[in-house]
Length: 215
Image (tube, rainbow, N blue to C red):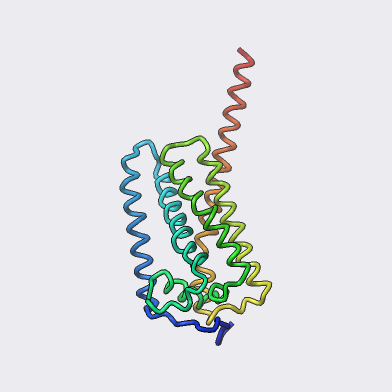
């Protein structure tokens, strides 16, 4: 894993430092999440958990649509000389997984599905939570399962190909492992919560039907 990694011909290194890239990404994400949190306070019927989930879905939905969307539709981002921020993000991330710069078919396929289906579904989940739609828990469950499936495929394909796509152990753990961990931990928690909510609703309906038969 240590040492040089394969990169496409014409690859232009990042012009922005790692701290600048991570700082801009982190601050912009925090700003969007904070604004949504403040807006959610206007919806008094929502629980704190629902508000946190709204923050998660806007963060992950916009990440899929904007950042991963750029990757899908900009196959030569690694040649960018302008210092365009999103291109810089992907150049930096490629240090942890060079398959992105190489446009490896597995990651491109995963990203196409994520951008076209999962990203918009996350924004729909945000709306469903805010408006207390009946399909909210089903939608959250489906999205979270999609996140888990995509992450398993992402890790498994790298493992089967030798886990040789990181520039160093630092970038491997910082980007490939830790940066993606949220899309495992949070979806798992959402799946458990939605499962309990759906089962509870079905049980309550069955009990209601049993009582109506008695009377």
